[in-house]
Length: 455
Ligand code: HEC
Ligand code: HEC
Ligand code: HEC
Image (tube, rainbow, N blue to C red; front, side, top):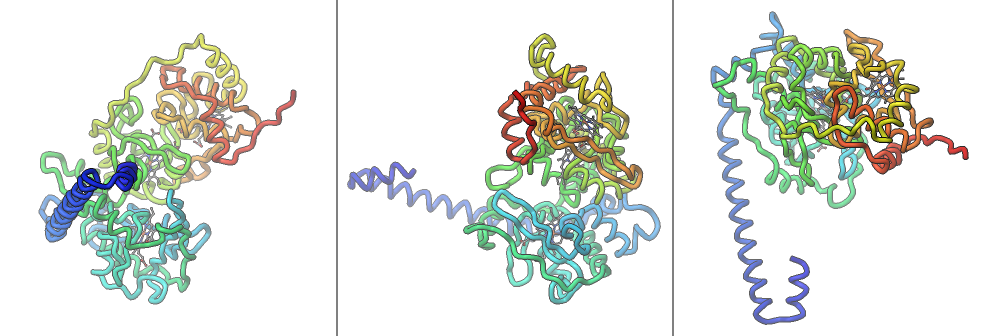
């Protein structure tokens, strides 16, 4: 577009006219599209939760028996766990729900809000309607548009009843009279009104639609994954403005890869049983993998508290998704030089914990074979774990959690690329070879050590 305009200013006349007509047509089209979008949104907002008997069954499923079924505050506490509100709304060693945790986005740092019942700094003054509007539409009182770092685009799928129970619970937590620090967002991202445009383009405010041809259990899984669990926030692809794309098919965030979690058998969890998925979400590990990084936190703060019925629902739902078309490539041949180097380095450095055959130790040291995360595209998690090590989730059933030591101080970029290529192509694994440049880039990004080069 820009070069054409330059040309037309150099050659006024018919070409300029055509350009202006094109612009006029474009403006009309944009206005029509916006009008259509607004109309669609208005109609969606008018339709309520669709309080069908089916939806009621879905929202009552899973929550434990007894008072958890009926008492709004007990229900709300459970659902707030499922929504992991505390993780984002608590600063490092800060007071629960008092906000002030800085969320790194590609556009800058957004601070979470104080959602304790403090009347000045928290949400103590809010009405139920204001709470619902913030959680389901991203609009706080006085028309303040929230940034989608707060996953209102996903909480829009949660029923009013569930959210109001969370509201009832939040009124019972200790009030904290503290304002979180200011956002660090450069112009133009510091203009909240821009979110109006983002919402028009990417925000689908429609309520959760149960699928009557599936079981209550399956629907409950979908309701949790798409709504409070906000699993898509990390596991779905994003376009350049942060709108969700490829559903649960993997996404790179903050130097991590949140793997595909569909039924795809190669890079997804298609080879995991329901019990494997449940064990991962409840204890932080299973016979294939251990949850580290942001998933370790999601397990520690949220999924470990879910009832077995809810965990099973999530497993049933995820495993039913067809997922991406990614399939195993030809594995790198064991006769390649990079594989021989990788094997030597593996036996010297990794063997003691991950075992010679790569099987690891159940729920403590992850298996490197049959572990979809290890074969994931890009190899980010493998490279970063070798460079800076990691820690598995600490949960009630696995309180110590195991640690993986850092190797950045010891292994060169070539060494790391060789080991990563080796484990991604041994014991039945098959995945693209890891390039030295990938390791170089991630080492720089993570600010990891480098080995002394003695020549
Ligand atoms: C992924 C992180 C994340 C999660 C999970 C999250 N929030 Fe938020 N929330 C934020 C951020 C960041 C903001 C501030 C957004 C802004 O300033 O535009 C926010 C803002 C809010 C606000 C608006 C407060 C105000 O004063 O404007 C409310 C209310 C809120 N969150 C409630 C919740 C509840 C309830 C849950 C759990 C169901 C939850 N949040 C889960 C990140 C999160
Ligand atoms: C804050 C980001 C984030 C959220 C939210 C999140 N995940 Fe994850 N998830 C990750 C990352 C990163 C990994 C890789 C962890 C690792 O390799 O140790 C992961 C790994 C997983 C795995 C293991 C996959 C594999 O191949 O090893 C499963 C299963 C999973 N997540 C399920 C879920 C479910 C279900 C939810 C929602 C209830 C969820 N995740 C929410 C970031 C997230
Ligand atoms: C002292 C024991 C120990 C040693 C030695 C060790 N690891 Fe680990 N490794 C672990 C533990 C525990 C975890 C789980 C914590 C984590 O994911 O950060 C882990 C995790 C991993 C993961 C992530 C798997 C996943 O599910 O995402 C990879 C890849 C890995 N190790 C590779 C290696 C390689 C390659 C070496 C040798 C250079 C090595 N490890 C040496 C204990 C060890």
